[in-house]
Image (cartoon, rainbow, N blue to C red):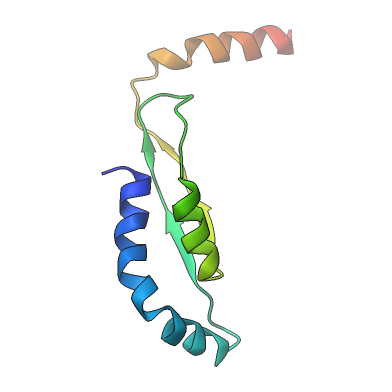
Length: 90
């Protein structure tokens, strides 16, 4: 399951209790709603996509989204960018 699917799964469970959740967060200044995700990318330039619906639903919870990206490729795909950066440094 990709990032969008995981977030939708969570949102589908949180949105029905949105008012209660926001009341709890409002009751204590130490609390906030956030989604901290660590997706693993298979390509060094692989992108992520979130639909407008998912972004709107997160915003309705006044939630932050933090992404900690990981690359799990074999390194071979990095060669063009690494070579380019080396050329720029010379």
